Length: 178
Image (tube, rainbow, N blue to C red; front, side, top):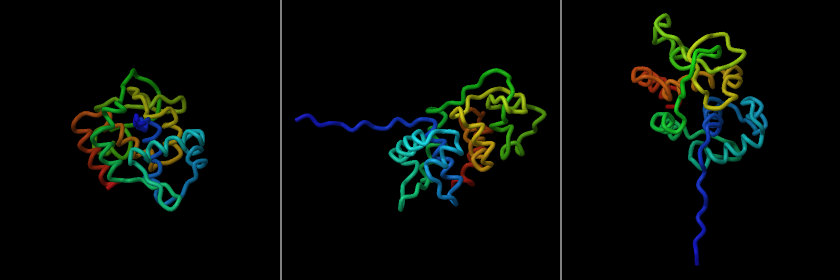
């Protein structure tokens, strides 16, 4: 008899976005609808993302509520995110600051020496080198949640930053997800 293998989930960028939103808002209980609204995603996208993130051990469902597995998230972001979701840099454009040009990392780097990285965004007020966000709705979601914005900035420094950027971003990530 032939054994049927269960198909393993393929982690998608929106799965990490949802897991990070849950992690930085651990003080809130959010429904799929609320997550979708705050992340500019459909409820069904959020549901599928949480299912994949759960199968990948980035989040867990306890007593009917979703909770981030911080150690797993930390490990994935530090050691895998730059390979799975690399920070693809583009041309100079208008957008929203990210990486070492944005808080909380900008306090460690003199801003007059660099052209900051930005997520392309028509509502953005800064010019810089474009970096593809994890998911298209990242700028809108980051504008609505400062804690999510800061963790996404750190993730971008780890995805696309130089060695010193990654070293400081690692420390900041550990303090937020530790």
